[in-house]
Image (tube, rainbow, N blue to C red):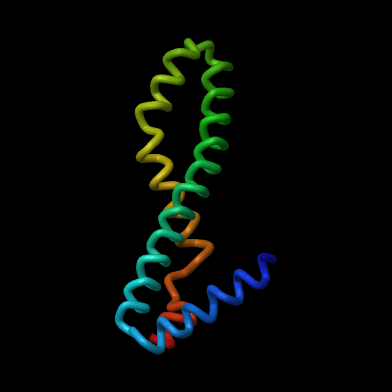
Length: 105
């Protein structure tokens, strides 16, 4: 099966799901959007964290700081920083406007 045919079947299946069970379709749409946003936050947060960490390592290397201490400091704040940076990027790039599917439901 080609990708186009598979995608067409999925779209047709989603159409019938929306027609038959509108509340289930709405819940599915909200869940998919939440997961997509979570993935975007993680993805963009990782990209921004890598840039920030690279700059921080270079700055601390100039000062002569022990690299092990720098890595330890980065490891402590990584999760929180990835979440914060990713949220900033996603909020700036994708304002919280309702999608077409959400408007229909």
